[in-house]
Image 1: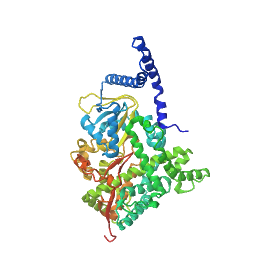
Image 2: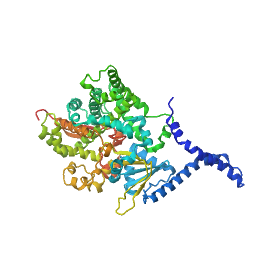
Image 3: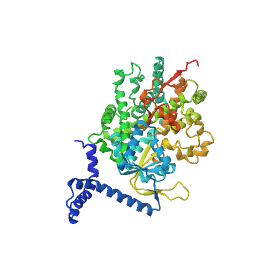
Image 4: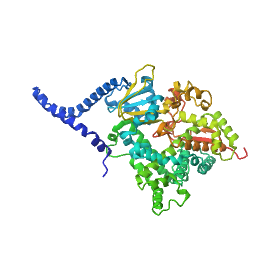
Length: 585
């Protein structure tokens, strides 16, 4: 029988507290008698036993950290003020922002008040937030060995990611990393036949739906395209999620077709998305998240649905291994076949597959979704991009690897999309030992970083800082990656642009993602023009509230609501219309 998350968490944290509780109860029972105060009421002894030890531990920990900081010649980071004990109002603000707000709006507000690096204390646990490129560089590169996922943060995502590459450290992380690396060689990622098959399928479905007079949920379409491409690339065969068809707007009588809603791939996709949303919600509660899922892990049922979808492919590969058939077919030279050759452990294989699937599906789907959002919002940029494509490959030829390398504006357009809408807007590590970060002020004392503290960083907010990118940082302008602004801002400080992370854990699929997104955009703009948003199809509940128009920055101009789980997405989808280009054009 599986132990409920809350009980397992209490089993971890209570034993170290039992002795202090016992001492406290003894003190409250005996000392008043020695001082002739009489016997304290039972309720006051129990309350004191519960409350006193964590308070004493907290005060002692603060004292120890202050001493350690002084011994290192460092000062402590500013702490976000909370009028409620235990950071309860901070929890409320973060949870509300996650459900209804703009990505990182609470953090941006705190940064304006406390600086770009600060500490929050949630349920008496400290955590660091930063948008400072110098500190992110330390975490990811220059002091990489001192920062890891760590047991607490790994436990938070374990029911989703298991022990895959994105949720492990040390030897297990190296095992997954080394196993994945060969599949992202130039030879493999420049084989565009897979991309073309699935792109043509997606384009034909778009044309059919537009011919019916309905707009397209582009986020749904690109999520299916990237899922099908990724599964064929990794498994040797696609899960064919586009066979479910495309969704209709919720106002259409065809929207709730049972054949669409109950399609096996849609069950998979719903669990795929919901499992990530629920996992991300846990972060608001810090390491004590099991107390809010006390009796039941709410992510595991969704992971079970995902496993049921993957298992037939996995079981088939294991069966072929048992009869010695894995070497016989070219289609067996895949990521899955290498996993099966390396181990018979289904859990390890499932976790490895699922981790790579998240990277292969969600990040590129997000990039393409926000790319089309920008095409709809900036028709002049869309026209310029299409001209480069037509001048390079014409109106119908399949682009090659060299074609994509030569299209500088296309790469700049994708980079600018990744800058303002990075697929992974937030990430975290934990420090192993106490250290310091240099002051951002000349001559200032370094900042003290305690051992074991969570260090969360936001590239979403860093990518939008005007002091790092210039006064036009909030403007969508691909030319910033082509003109003098590259040398002025990016060349001198490359860690201000991290859509694929950096250092030893930099995304192995970076070039795969660039190629896939570039290829799809080329084929899209060979076939369509005049992109526009379809607000009549956008679910009303997912439109930005009117109050956003009074806010600062891009929040005031967004036409869709941005959501975040492990990656960023458009709530309610991205509904667009476009004009099909006739062959003779």
